[in-house]
Image 1 (cartoon, rainbow, N blue to C red):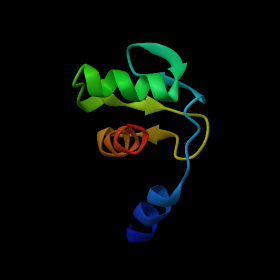
Image 2 (image 1 turned 90 degrees about the vertical axis):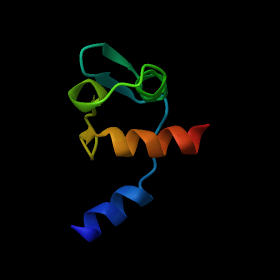
Image 3 (image 1 turned 120 degrees about the vertical axis):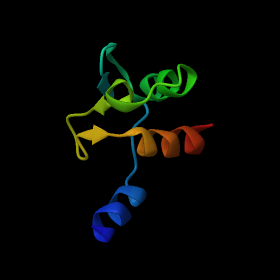
Length: 70
């Protein structure tokens, strides 16, 4: 499990990658991350689906991206 977390922390994400934010549709990853943070979404509403790996981004991963991109 530790190896998975380490790999995820080293991954780079394209802010322009088209993803799906649960309940809100498709948009660039940067926009999805901004919406989750701005709207203070949690749980399933804060789930981003991607075609690349990892295919799901949870709230913790989204918060890390938001901090990295701010």
